[in-house]
Structures are given as C-alpha cells and as structure tokens.
Length: 526
Image (cartoon, rainbow, N blue to C red; front, side, top):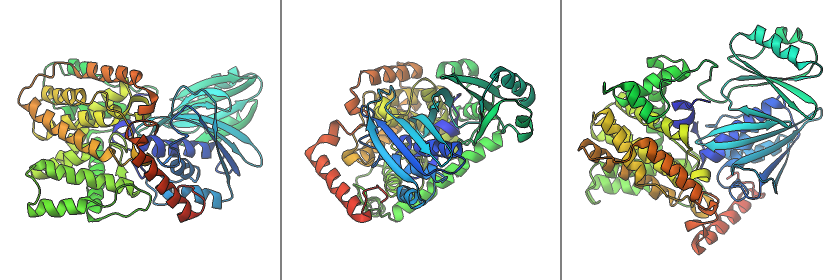
C-alpha cells in the first residue's frame, strides 16, 4: 500500500496511550467484526511469548482498542476505556493466552472468533502509528490494510471461472485467488462491494463476507504518486524550490484522488482538533490509571507570571506538549502524529510557534502538511513502530517532521526544510523505548519535549545555512539499520531501560492493584 499522509502519518484521531497498540488493534477488531457479520459469542486472543504484547496488551491499550473494535466503535469513542467490560456485558466470552508462535513481527494479533454458526481466524500485525495489516484469514495468506472495500467469497469447484467473471464484472478493482488445504478464497479489493446481483450469477459460492474500510483515505489499483523518497522529491522539484507543504499537497492529491482544497481542509480539521485538546489539557485532566497527574496548569501559571527561565517560544512549546501528553494519558482525544507515544512533539511545536508568530490556522495546517511529507519518506522505507525501531522511530521521526514544519512556518526554502529534518533525526538515532510502569507517559513526556527542542534548534540551524552533511534518505536508512542492532528488550517491551528500575517495577505493581480494586476484574477498563 502506498503511504498516505492522513492514513499513515498525521492520524488517526484517537483515544488511548499507544497508536500501535490501541488504534491499530481497534482497526483489526473492526475488520474481524465484519468477518463475523457483527455477531459472535466467544473470542480467543493469542499473543506470541516473544513478542511485545504479552507484557503490554493490558496497559498500553491493545485490549481497549481490540475490544472496542469488536464492539464496532470508532477510535475516538469516549466509551473505549470500558470496552473490555462492555464486550463481556454484551455476552461475549473473552480468553487471552500467551503462546509459542514464533511470530516474526512483535505486534502480532491471533484471533479466533466463534458464533453459533461459524468460526473464523484472523492473524494481523500492527505496523506503527495506528496502521495494521491482516496477514492471514482462515489459514489463507492475505494482505489487507483496511484501505478498500473487501468482498470475500469462499468457493467450491472451479474458482478460476469465478475469478474471470468477477474481473469482467467489477470494473475498477483487484481480484485475487487464495488457496490453502484444498479450500479456495476469492478476494475482491475495490472502491465498492461486489453487488448481490453479480454474486448471484456466480457458481460454487459457499459464503460471502464484506469488510468495510477502516482508513480515511482509500486506495485505488491505479494509484501513482510523484515520489516516494526525499531524493525523488528533489529530482521532481528540479531546482524550482517549491515549498515543502505544496509538494505535500501534490503528493496527497495523487495518493488519495483529492483536490488541493480537500487536502488543506482535512489538515485544518486536524489543527482544530489539536487546539481543542491543548486547551482541555491546560484546563486540567483526571484519570486514575496513570503515572503523571495534571502538571501543565502550574507550568502555565508560572509562564504567565514570568516565574520560569526565559525560554522564549520554547516554553509555550513545552506547555502544549505537556498538555497533549496529559490529554492522551487521561484517554482524551489526540492525533497520532506520527504516533500516540510521540503525539505531542510535532503539534505542540507547530501550534505554539505559530501562535508566537501570530500566524493563523492555515499556516499551521501547511506546516503540518510539510511535516507529513517527511513522515511519508520515513514510513515508506522504515516504520513508526517503537516495537520495531525503538523510540528513534517515534520521537526521532517526530523531531525530523517538526524540524521541517518549523522551517515552513519561518518561510524557509525547500532545501532548508529537508536539512532541518535530516539534522533532527541524526540527533536521535539509537533512542530506546522504555516506558515506566508500562504506561506511555514517562520518560515519554521528556522525549517529546526533547524532540521538539531538537527540532527548533535544527530548524534555526537550517535557516542559518548549517550543513546537514548526511542526506535525509541515508539518515532514515541508518536508523533502520541501527534498529536491527537493538536488543528487543529496549524496543518497547517493558523489559529494559528505565522500565525495569526498582521504582518503575513498584509503580507498575501499585497501578495494577489499583486497576483490580477499581473494577474488580483487572480488565484495564479504568
């Protein structure tokens, strides 16, 4: 699937501590619910013993997201924290087991769903930033991203005739034949479901399922984008010096089949969601199951009274970052930009700096679009998932994107935007992911602040003509290679770094006891 700014980079709009865990799991759950025609009585969830999920699924939002998806809820639904209990209350039996599956991806979900009439299995992976891929369904190897209308047909007899008839009938779309154990599954990816009328004319159809898209920007079989790397973008620009935000618009217009006005409007909507969340965070948030309480209110008071050291716009950036992190920790609405764990560095820096410069929301949207294109280059050749790349994949990416965004606010050139992005990521290669007490709060808050401060420094350095030395594409590739050299214990598994200090272990136990006492089951419902 070709990366989209709104699918993969700036989004989803969500609740929960982690996009890799919560938003991606919710999307997996939504597809699984469709597979069961909205009705099931039992679900078995299996996690590989050597993956990231056995130690994090109940505290970083996997359970909350997955069961919310199985309830048919949206990623920003206010009921999400209570989804495990809500699913049980609906009459569904839930079992979660740790198994020896040798799954190659650390974020692998193995689901078996049962109803009175049928049983289906779904294997899916969370790939970072709320994105996911279904890799197996009922034993068939598939590749589903939730980016199109999926019509699934179980076929007996000659499936070749079914495939040929569907290709002739559907027009735009892709028809795939999967075979396993003597069974046949025909998958149709298209801009709409295959109609009942077309299916009625096919022979040998045993069962039909329809899976609704879960991503905001759909894919087309003829999708072509003008570039997929920074080097290709610069070659495409051919020295014209087109602003980075405008190149981002061109990219997303091609990717999503959208107009320029639609692309800018989508980002403006995100800006307004972020500003509302910032205001809510500063006003104060409450939530029992978290490490850090409301702190940004006091920072705001001291900043306004002149009681803090003079940090200029950086102090406002710190305030906004803290506010967004507190909203996230209290299950409020945030935007994964590019992830929930790194949700605050980029928007906090952009919105705070734009306000300090007396710029409007459209300027903020253009800066975020510029950052989104840098994120496209990262996601195309690497990942945003800390379980795969450590915090360099989350905080490092956020810093790189924010550097380009801040240069855009300053009216800098395309070359300066790219240089800021390169320098900012260079400064964060090797950063580990070690959330304390298995909550994505500390040291995540500090890492978000560091990412934004780094971005601001690199933006000013780029504006002053500092040499990036290493091109952005090479920096991304280097971070990818460093990730492969990292032990899994320091890649968001709660097995290394600050997460295994005596204080962190004691704090995790204290919070776990509080969860059990608050709901009686320890389900993580808050």
